[in-house]
Image (cartoon, rainbow, N blue to C red; front, side, top):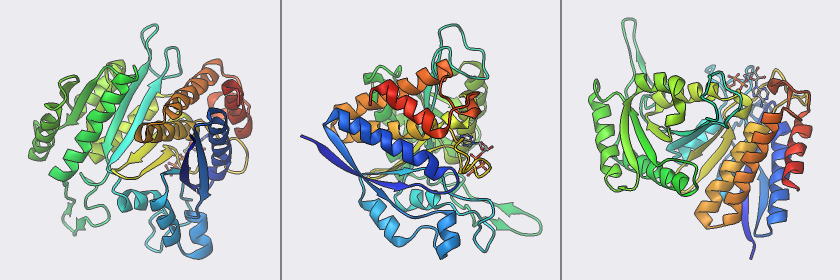
Length: 362
Ligand code: ATP
C-alpha cells in the first residue's frame, strides 16, 4: 500500500526556487523507488516578491492550504529591499510559527567524523546533537511590543506551564527516538539560568517533572553560559538540548557555526499538528539567479521532514530514506566532489543535487 502525503511548498524568495526544485525532485525520486509512499506537492505563493507584486505576504488561501497539508516545506523568504511600511522585513515563516503554534524549533548540529568544522575534534569523533528551541514565548513574548520611553526600555519574558509541558514531552520523545535509532545516547539537557531567574527555575521544575516519566533517559541541567563554552570545548558529549526562545536563538547560530557553514544547516519548527521544514539560511539575494546556491541545507531539511512524517505515520521507508539522504550529503561533503562554491567546489545547484540522486541510485 502507498501512503500519499500532501506537502505545502513555499519556494519563497532569492535562491528559494533554485534549491526547492531539485529537493522536490529528489523527494519524488526517493518515493518512486520506495513505492510505499508518495507526495502531492502544492506550490503556494508567499514571501517578499509576492508582497511586492500583490501587497500580500502570506495570502489567506496559502495559509489555509498549508493548514490542511501533511507537512510544510519552505525554502527562504524575505528580500532586504522589500519591507512593510513600518520598515520590518517580510517573514511569513514567523507568521506560520504563530498560526500553527510551532513551539519546538529543532536545530540539529551534525558533523560526521572527519567532517568540516572550525573545531579540532578528537580522532574519529563527530558531533551529533539536537538543540530544541522553544519558539513561541520566552523573551520573544513582547516582540514588536516592547515599551520604550525616553528613560527606559522594557520587554517581558513569558514561560507558561502549558508550553513547558508540550515542549518537554516533545523533547524527551525526540531523545527516545534518537536512542532507538542508534543516533543518540539518551541524554537530555535543560539549558537555563535557574540560578539567577525565578522564571528559569519554573522552566526547570517542569523539565524535571517530564524527566521523571523517562527513567530510560538521562536528564541533566546546564546554565546557558556554560553551555556556550561546552558547545565549543566538548560538543560531542551533547545529545538533546532544550532551551528558552532567546537562548535557543543564540545557541543555534553557535551550532550552525560548528558545522561547515549555513549551506549545511537544516531546521524544523514543529507543533502538535503541523510542522515546517526549512534551511537555517536566508534567501541569499547576493547569489540568487547564479545557480551557485548550496542545496544541501534544504535537502537535509527535507530529510527531517521524511523522519517526522515516517515516525508519525509509521512508514519505515521514509525514516530509512531520511538516513540515506543524510549519508549521501555526508559523502559528498567529505569527498568534496560535486559541491557548490561555498564548500570549495565548482558544482552548480542542480549538479550538487543530482549527484546526491546518483549516490542514492535514483
Ligand atoms: P536572513 O536574515 O533571512 O537569515 P541573511 O541576510 O542573514 O538572511 P542569508 O540570506 O542566509 O543571510 O545569507 C548570508 C550569507 O550566506 C550570504 O553571503 C549568502 O550568499 C550565503 N548563503 C546563504 N545560504 C546559502 C546557500 N544555500 N548556499 C550558498 N551560500 C549561501
